[in-house]
Length: 87
Image (tube, rainbow, N blue to C red; front, side):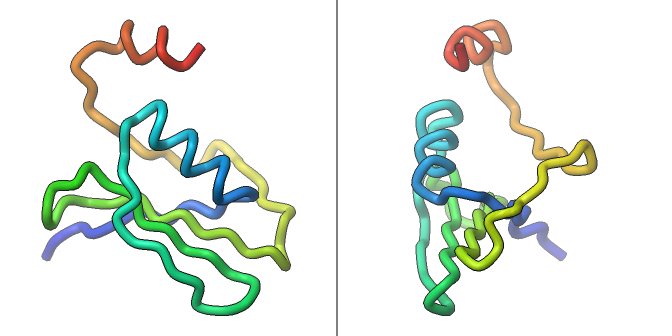
């Protein structure tokens, strides 16, 4: 078994892509719209068969609530550099 992705509902796909690409340097690997109100984007590090982040935007449901019950972990070379980059 292989872990393929973690899905996150987002309010604004463009802002979310900007955040994950600028801060974590993830790349858009695939984008599609399964319906007129839905956008899905898979982001990753460009390595084949690596786990990806799936962003889902539903224009009919803009009331996305972010709670403390989701965690997505990334390994970084320097936590200090990442914290500096995020400010």
